[in-house]
Image (cartoon, rainbow, N blue to C red; front, top):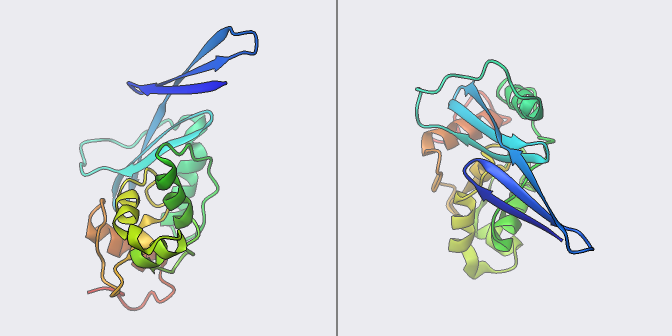
Length: 187
């Protein structure tokens, strides 16, 4: 049996062996900071996968000069995305959340690059039209900025609503992914 405990930037994994003896493993999170057109991106993970990717609302953090090996693929793929050379990510994601949150986050992965869907459509896809607020809340707790494309979820009327990173970033991301580069999608 495996148990994973979190706290203070460290992961403590306890493995209960069949003979009843517990083995404790410690994994340090590694961090990297990447400058993007939308601000500094914080990437956190360990040897078993990424734990979070987020955009910071500060410019006080400097980009990381020496990227940890476990985070290199994420940094490279994000650079390719922002350069317009990548439309899908292939990264190990260590989802931490409730079963419902994980279902929402996995459903977000099915929204194609350059497309959007509404919170209502997402709730329907998950089988409960009445869960629209819960879907929106889970969407707002997405730990993997851009990689799990919560920015592709819009209001039923096509409006830009509800984005933890700021609506200006959501607008930028949707226009970046749009096949129609010559015109703005949103005013």
